[in-house]
Image (cartoon, rainbow over all chains, first blue to last red; front, side):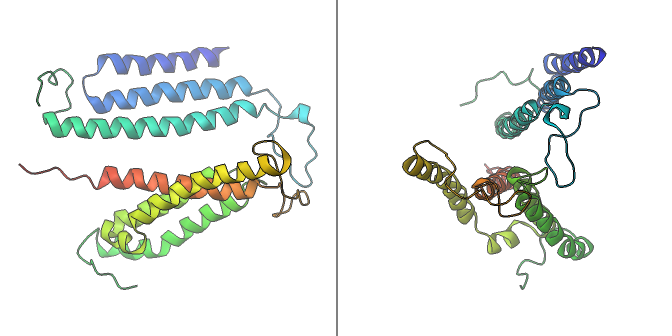
Length: 114
Length: 149
């Protein structure tokens, strides 16, 4: 139970960075930390003490009741791919904003420039 | 092949070491995706490792050196071809057996390379698509030039 609470604390660290920092790059890194904490939480739900890897190999006779749950691992792999796309999109938008306004400080990006 | 752009990229030490390490990274990615249905890994991880070998080459030699060997238009076409082949294989299963993405190949023997039906074919398609897509994301973010004026 203490591990789940620490995962939630890591999520709160990401939220704090996203709402208090003024640099766009730091905001992108904070959103990444939020995603990693959710992935860690999903992996910890699937874990059971004393269980083994869910892989069939030659010479290893593991019953399916002795394996960890493989479904959240597949879902987390999909989630990692989506986070890669989100990070690439946010980086491209930050580059475009820097070209337009010559700054990355979000308190100075207020003027309309057509 | 002859390097037509000797003044781009990093120093001579980095280029010499890169000539030795790039094919090792590429071969490791190939191994990961060929054994994707027997061990951890698969098409996605293999494609990412292959794309990282191309990123390594670009950082050491400059983007014109890589452009001569692998055109950007070719990468776009291969990525689109991967998406089309995925749907085509699904429609073959729909036509022959009645369900979309149903397995129409032989299952082979367990724990061999030739096994698991069409999963190695999908690993190949996903490897090509993910590798090309990740390298194109890197290329367009790195080769960005601000317009003067």
